[in-house]
Amino acid sequence: MTSTCPRSGQMQVGHICGSPFDATNCRKRNRRASYHSVKREFMTSSSSYIPSTDRILAGVALMLGFCVTAPLLDVAAKLASDSIPVGQITAARFIVQCALMAPFVWIMGLSLRVARGQWLALLLRAVLLLASTFCFIAAIRVMPLADALAIVFVAPFIVLLVGKFYLGEDVGLRRVGAALVGFVGVLFVIQPSFAAFGAVALFPLGTAVGFAFYILVTRGLSRQMHPVTLQFHTGLIASLMSLPVMILAQGTGSELLDPVWPEGIVWLWLLGVGFFAAISHMMMTYALSLAPSATLAPMQYLELPVATLLGYLVFHDFPNKLTLTGIGIIIGAGLYMIHRERVTARRLVTERAAPPI
Image (cartoon, rainbow, N blue to C red; front, side, top):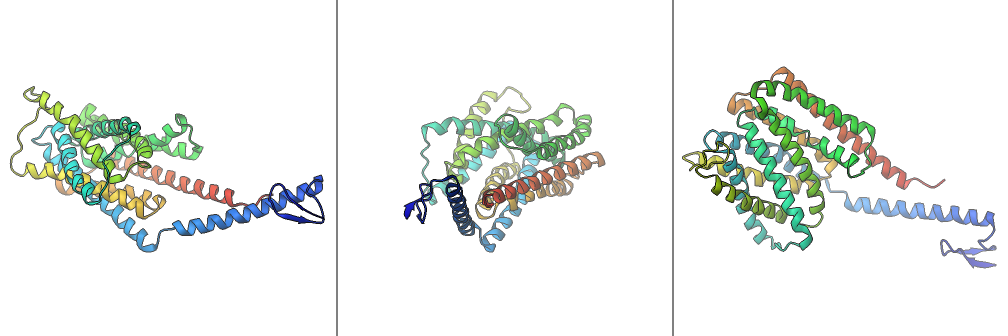
């Protein structure tokens, strides 16, 4: 007697898949077949998406380039801040970035059209990055680079906590604990900085909060727009928002906003701010397209020792023992959080590929 099992569509010989015993056997066979099918599909798709060694090495090299060039942006901004207001340096960062991105958009033949539903997110992204940049430049104007940057590195912890408690993402207690430990490390950095520089030491915390939400907004946009186009639009919107503020602030005497005419080598520092901003973020973008983010994520913490070295070489600044302790705690907590994300990802893959009972 031959029939077709209603679940699998396979021909069954000698019985109908109808009795409880036969139905159980049928379900087991179907689950086993489904498991092996999923396993083959997973192995095939995984192998097809595993980057080659050359691509991974290229991605790692680009990420190393980001870790070196991003602090150079901070060095140029700090050098310029001796004679140029913070608002003017911030505006220059986005104007130069936009000017540098425009030729790439044309050469790559990218479309600048933006869907109606994306404009609000683009505007919000530009505002968040503009505010974060202003706060950070205002901080490094008086603070050592390493101190300010260490506080900004609390941003991934903020993203994680917002994801868990506001967006409802599945985040384990260990990662939440690592984020809280990271905040303790930030207190170690802020305490001596606050005593030395006053409320300015809180500016990097504003940068961290703004950048955390900037990352969350970018998550959605990056799936819909090419990274070069996204960088161009962000630079353009931020430039258009900065210029009216500079015009209105002219002659007000505001230490942070009243623009001045740059002289001599200061032009080079202003160009350097935009140049290193564009180059570093392009390096990071293409690094993520070549190598797995799990490989690159721990490397971002190399930016801290590079900033510390540059701060010492250029400005003769070096963190004190309490600040170094805080930096160590922040790096340790961040790396542990990345480790737990890897463990969770591997467990999910194992659970999906596990055979049914």
